[in-house]
Length: 602
Ligand SMILES: *[C@@H]1O[C@H](CO)[C@@H](O)[C@H](O)[C@H]1NC(C)=O
Ligand SMILES: *[C@@H]1O[C@H](CO)[C@@H](O)[C@H](O)[C@H]1NC(C)=O
Ligand SMILES: *[C@@H]1O[C@H](CO)[C@@H](O)[C@H](O)[C@H]1NC(C)=O
Ligand SMILES: *[C@@H]1O[C@H](CO)[C@@H](O)[C@H](O)[C@H]1NC(C)=O
Ligand SMILES: *[C@@H]1O[C@H](CO)[C@@H](O)[C@H](O)[C@H]1NC(C)=O
Ligand SMILES: *[C@@H]1O[C@H](CO)[C@@H](O)[C@H](O)[C@H]1NC(C)=O
Ligand SMILES: *[C@@H]1O[C@H](CO)[C@@H](O)[C@H](O)[C@H]1NC(C)=O
Image 1 (cartoon, helix red, strand yellow):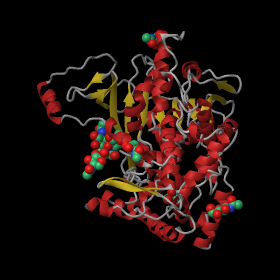
Image 2: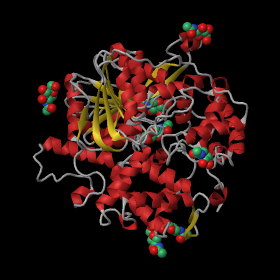
Image 3: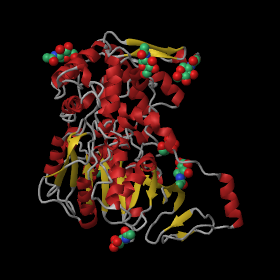
Image 4: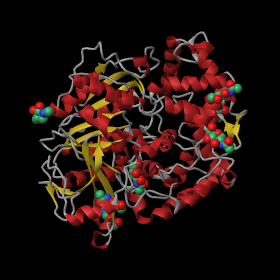
């Protein structure tokens, strides 16, 4: 088959495996496109069927158009989500917020970014909470469709939820993209990248082309796709909706955006929540980010530990070892063997392939560390693999093509933000770069996942051709209009507690609330306690006096009862109110959903 033949022998591993989970599942959540015929008919006959429940003012020429007092933009109705109205618009923002002389004659150079809003039913004060799902490269539009219903339940009806595709991302125009077409991406983005020493010659040569293509394909806009500009875009959004104060909840990379915003615009930062924190000092200042993997091995140890505790009834791996130390060793050794001896898996003439170390470890185990609610499935797949049947692991972890159609926002934003390019990262040649990268891996806090950022990320960063145009410098002692609320789990595989502390140090009077447990961002662990802190903060600006820990609710790992297996507490016997039960259910849904984009994953 033509397609199978075109499948290259080596594939470019996504730097951010969780994006690939996103890709696998994205289809079902796409908003439907307009039924143009019906729309036209409705308009022509003037049958305006809108129930005027909110204070919107209808535009008479188009029943889907809405505008609101105090706002400078108009919206188009773009569907409903569990009985809530969604509305969309596009906002034009200057290419360079910080130096308008770069914006061309008549300010002709700009970005257009899509906004999407889920209307709260009791948002009497018309306060919009801006959300960012992470990435970098995560789409706000996709986020709302996928998670908006649950977040609305969690946050309550008193706020509108507003999110956006950041400049360069998804529906933004132009987009961060290093290839002129997807067809060409499929051909040219492939590079052998598994073994740092053996593959470095090809990687070095390939990266030189890649960075040139990025610079050429994006032209003048490429240099302005960075986080400080996106932070300034958030002010354009506030201005467009006539809101003075920033209300914000950012996850993962969204915490980098939130910290950047709060540093640049402290006077508007009234209610900023950062959840699953990135160390902004490392992000902007360091060639190698040395902090993000601080707790990754601890999460893996947690997986093994919880498995042994759960026993073989509930964790299929438990029967393979008598202690957590033994199971850990066995898993690491067995999977490591796949480096040199991958397994051929044959299902039928159209489904067969090779299951190797990188697929199991970085497309299977590593993403599962983000969401412990899915550990049971991971344990099932690994147990079958260790017992000699690799089919389930192959089907789950090996079968995605290499072409992540997220375009290049992730790479472009990270690389434009940070220390990149030969001037900032001088090396005498490939050998020296390889040596530096190996030294970095060898000194990593993670012994198990130290190449989680796949090798080509370093090669791209070193060779990067687009100049850094921002002069943002993270600082300490930032006094915001209201202190930040900082959320974290105890052990986050990619945004560790120690990074939450770096934000806590940087922002005056900010407070950390830690939910005890494993996983990425507070939402990995259902907890009413966390919810109460979030609501008290948003509604009344209340922060705890001191460092605070919350318990999680239920058993998020390897539960026993039917309810527990779904991550639920026993709702019948709980003393919770109806609303608390709804919040718990929403939290459990989010805790199980692997879409959530991790930090470089989101
Ligand atoms: C925003 O712009 C895109 C084209 O760039 C268009 O397809 C979309 O319909 C616009 N959205 C709205 C709400 O006008
Ligand atoms: C603004 O941009 C112009 C044109 O690129 C440049 O000459 C000028 O030095 C910049 N101004 C500042 C304050 O950076
Ligand atoms: C609606 O909001 C007002 C003011 O924020 C509050 O007093 C009231 O309880 C809310 N009603 C509902 C049903 O949530
Ligand atoms: C942006 O994301 C939405 C939601 O996943 C998707 O439907 C849409 O096609 C994306 N837009 C572009 C231009 O890729
Ligand atoms: C191979 O197996 C898959 C999954 O079971 C099935 O959907 C497909 O039709 C099979 N293909 C052939 C050629 O048998
Ligand atoms: C291997 O596992 C697959 C399910 O993933 C199952 O369909 C198959 O029968 C198993 N093979 C053997 C030989 O047990
Ligand atoms: C350093 O890394 C190389 C290549 O990954 C590896 O072979 C070697 O054992 C490491 N050395 C140490 C001290 O970890």
